[in-house]
Image (cartoon, rainbow, N blue to C red; front, top):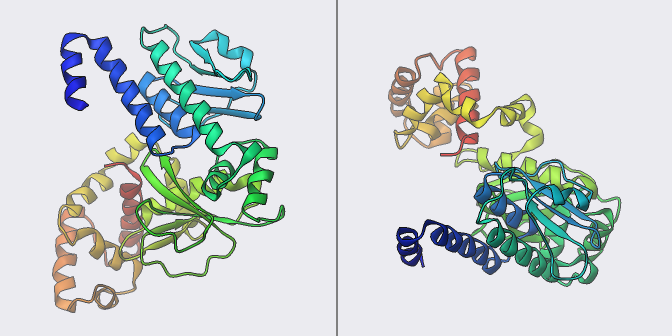
Length: 338
């Protein structure tokens, strides 16, 4: 298929681009992706926000050009200002892309988006919800309160429940809860699990969102995704609530994070196969001897590595200020896409 797209692009640029759009949405359908994944695909492909308004299901979703959810448009009539397409289900639902100047590719993009939304709603409709994964997806999306209540009943979650969302690798087993689904995110496929109590040690990397009511589960999911990006071999389970003020670093724009001198220096240190593990062990412990115990290495080996790290970073790690600085740089580095 990729070879065909390349050949088409050489003959006709629009035809090649249209095939890329079709292949993208067909891939999402094949993976059983959620509504936000389809909107994210449309927004990123178009380079402009994409939205969905579905009065029947009380669904109002909108994703920015950066692939992240943003404030929804609740009035379907507003979609008429942009290229849009009605769903073929007689519901009056509409999808759109907020492209100021129409493109020749809008037709195929919106048609595939509308088809993907329609088929996904048939699969995970809160009106006839028949699988746990679909219910998890509804609870973690910006769905209506009615849809959430139905999904919660499906999962046997009482209305007043306080629930954590746990994010882990898509290919990992679901050891945390049967209430689990693999969802598409800007960072790739991730397994989301809903747990009422977090008392586990994980063999896989995991991020844990704060305990929230059912209405706030999308926020806990966002927190869990950030925490997962910070998980490592040294600290395989990261809880959002334990990040404290460090969680604010997730709000720093990616370009600013990537260009900070401390992060640039840390990237050089990360080229050493032992660099990040050693640095994290050092900043998490009180001494190089304690770091040696965490790493399972001889003290002299860690001392040698510590000297090399200080040389690459440009500051001492034996001081409190140096460890604080390295901790912030490590968080910024792991939050920044490769």
